[in-house]
Image (tube, rainbow, N blue to C red):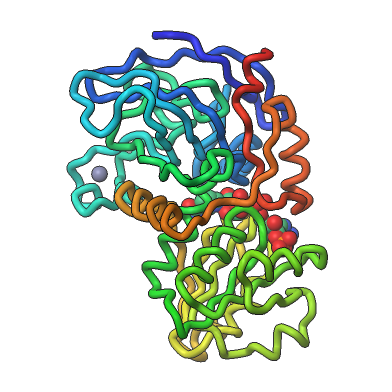
Length: 352
Ligand SMILES: NC(=O)c1ccc[n+]([C@@H]2O[C@H](COP(=O)([O-])OP(=O)(O)OC[C@H]3O[C@@H](n4cnc5c(N)ncnc54)[C@H](OP(=O)(O)O)[C@@H]3O)[C@@H](O)[C@H]2O)c1
Ligand SMILES: [Zn+2]
Ligand SMILES: [Zn+2]
């Protein structure tokens, strides 16, 4: 074992603060990574504050962070994909059983025995896993992905969660040229959704509550922007969407979007607000529409998404911050004041 500087929170009401955690020495299949940047996902905030207590109660101390990019410092003897000096990424998963039907299909995000990057039982050290708000991490190479050389590293970190979480459902639901696609909520996930929908050739429409994000939405690739609190503007698009991706982190009315779907249209929820949403059945019955959910993506698809980003020069629009600014960043997330992802420069941890 070795020590690593990190930021953790001790309870649902405590701020994140400096700490030291133990990491395992790499086993033969492990890759040890010096973390250079880690994105701040709204899920980090939900978890730090135990907002998902009914589904996944948070175990404290909690070290969040699952949008990790860094440089490989050491590899185990059986590692074949990486060597010291390589760039590497780690997302929301660090382990799975490798034997279930989902794993065999490369869909580790559905493995019943998966280990999430933080807050899940750590089968090596006991206790729970600690995430990317840290100077280093040790991960089985199966859960480490390669980073395209042409992308800015700070802007690449968010691809590991916000990127794959929006890319995967679009591929699943067939987002292509000729489709009309809506993205609800222009935050970390939403702005990646806009970039992917645009790159896949769809007619891309952003729904936002923030009047000050309209120009940015167009710059990011939207063909149209709708202020979702303007009922008239919403009504004009009734029955016209093939697919809508809901990326909202807080309570909101999903029925207003369902009625914008075409017959057999689908709305996928990736946002995971603390409180249950209410659903009017008739919105689905009329038009045989569906609402579904989608969790991150498997490792093969995560690598596919990163390669796609490399080829199309897609990365996140980031505000790079120091680790010491994380509590302030969380407060800004709650005000939808992020353009469009915070990326923590881990060099700032050296000062701790
Ligand atoms: N399914 C998965 O695998 C997965 C993966 C990662 C994250 N998530 C979840 O996805 C959600 C979004 O994450 P994120 O990191 O993108 O969050 P974020 O950066 O904070 O963005 C959320 C956006 O939602 C909109 N919003 C916020 N409060 C709202 C309200 N009260 N009513 C309507 N719209 C509101 C805002 O967009 P506008 O200003 O444009 O309105 C805001 O920018 C979170 O719940 C997160 O936990 C799920
Ligand atoms: Zn996330
Ligand atoms: Zn499995």
